[in-house]
Length: 86
Image (cartoon, rainbow, N blue to C red; front, side):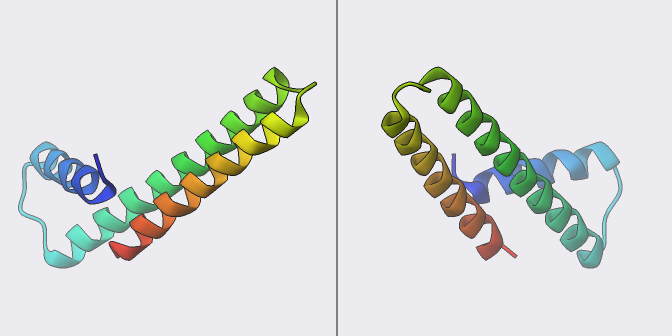
């Protein structure tokens, strides 16, 4: 599922949970909060995965570095995608 679909799904759930009509300004604030939190989660997850890969493949540092690089590339792509939604 791409970031746009995830954001729309989250917005639908937030709007349903609140049970009130939100102004466009309030909706924008909620979108920004969700986007910022998603970026923070992606960053934390990427860091966690890099640390685990380094521990798991410690003796094979080349493989651990390759995995960490791939995770970082994926994180950059995700952040770029989320920022383009703003």
